[in-house]
Image (cartoon, rainbow, N blue to C red; front, side, top):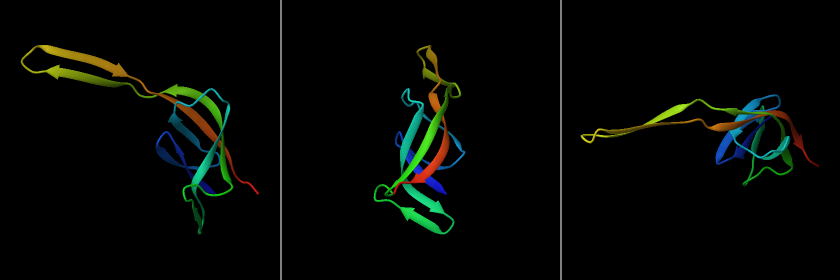
Length: 102
């Protein structure tokens, strides 16, 4: 079974055993997400806005840093330039299971 979850304004397709990098989340060790959509072969459930009684469970692996990007600001004819960099932090999660709550 696969599910679509939302976190930080983005949507991710996940299944049990996947490792996903999301934006930096809190200090908890275990997370629980609501499913927006689930599909298993020909069976598709679309939520309005969430699918009833479906939860996606995940556990924290580690917090990682993304790739470094460089930002260059330049003003022509003024001899002004400024170079800065940024590394985004992400939370790496392992999807443990997708459960149906009865």
